Image (cartoon, rainbow, N blue to C red; front, side, top):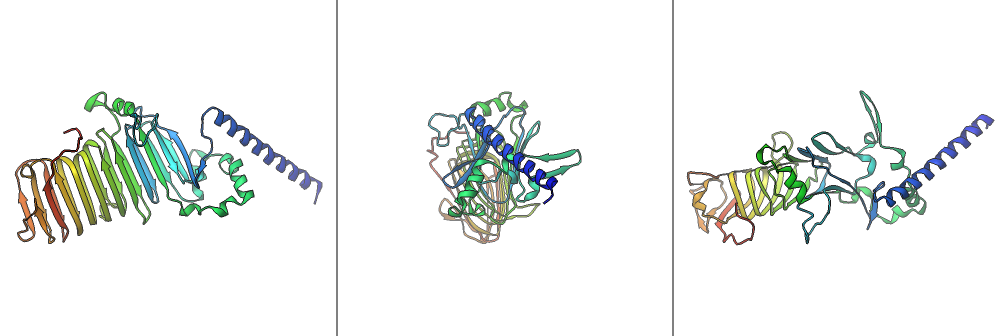
Length: 350
C-alpha cells in the first residue's frame, strides 16, 4: 500500500472516531437537557417523540404503510388514561432515517417512505440529509457488536404506531375565536399498505375533519365532538375493502363511510346533519339516545332491516321521517338494526 493511501486510511479512521465521540457527547448533552436526540429502545420497541406547536396549525397529515394511529385529546387532564403534559407526536417502531416529519406554517406532516430515498434527498434547491448521527450512534453500534438484534423481532415485524397527544389548553386555544379561528381543521390519515390502519380518536372536542384513506380500516371513536366530517374510503373515489367502525358517546356533524364490507356499531352517537353508508355486505347496528322518528332515514338493503326490533323490510327498504338529520344507508345485503338506547352515557348532550 502506498504511503499516501496509508495516510488517507489513518485520517479516515480518525475522522470516524472523532465523529463517534462527538455523537456520544451530543447524546449525553441532549439527555441532560431533557431532549431526545436518538430513539429510545424500550421492551424491544423503538420510540421517539416531538412536541407539537398548535399555533396557526390547520392540518395534520399522516402517510404510512400500515399500523395504528391514536389521537388523544385533552391528554393533560388529571387522571387521563393517556396522559401527557404537552402536545406531541410519538412515533413507535419507525426507523429515524426512513420517514420525514416536517412542520410548515400551517401543516404538520409525517411521511414514511420505507426505503433508502428518505435518507438522502435531492431537491431542486439543494440537498437534505438528517445526519450521520442517525446512522452511527452508540446505541446502534452497541447492538451491532453484541448482536443484540438477533434476540429481537425483526424491525419489519414490529407493529408501527403513531400517537398524537393534544392538550386541553392547545385545543381550547385553537377554538378560542369560535368559527373565525383558524384552528385545527383537518387530520388526514393515509395507509398505503394492504394491512391498512387501526385508528382511535378519543376525547377530541374540536371541529375537525377526520379523513381516513385505506383499503382496510378499524376505527374507534369515543368521547369526541365535531360539527365537521368523519370520512372513510380507499384511495381516489373507491370504497375500502373492509371497515370496522365503533362509535360511542360522541357527537358528529357528518359521517360518510364507503366500504365493500362495513361492520358498524354505535352507542349514544349523535349525528347532527348527515350519515351516509355505502357497502355491499356487513352488519350495521345504530343505537340512538333520541326518538328514531325524528330522523330522516332511508335504508336500502337486501339484508334484514329492523327498527326497534320490528322487521321493517318492504322487502328491501325503509323510509321514515322528514327532517334532519338525514340517514342514508345503501347496501346490497348488509343487516341493518336501528334501535333506541336510554342515552344514559354521561356524555354531554349536543
